Length: 124
Image (cartoon, rainbow, N blue to C red; front, side, top):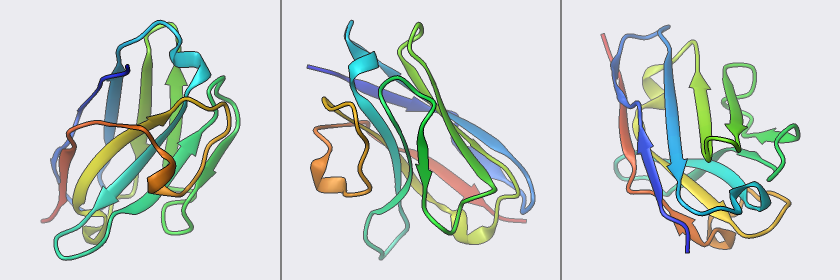
């Protein structure tokens, strides 16, 4: 069983930055692929970024490539999402997800564990 707790959301102006953190319980977190998804009001949950269990190999949705960076520190059981050049359309609840497989996926249904979500609002 893995529990995920997100933090770092908030209100930021367009063009600003935020760094989200996802702290995981469990001693074998390095064997879990991690990902971030987001859900805006009235829209379906969408993939943002993913990372392999060991880190290093990452994958991004087209709309956030070159602005967002996913990373992880397995010694701290934490996955991060650095978000730069934020736009109003990035406003959403951001969810951390993990699955007990080495390789990542952009399909939400393939992830076993989810955090409670953290609100990110980009507005002037």
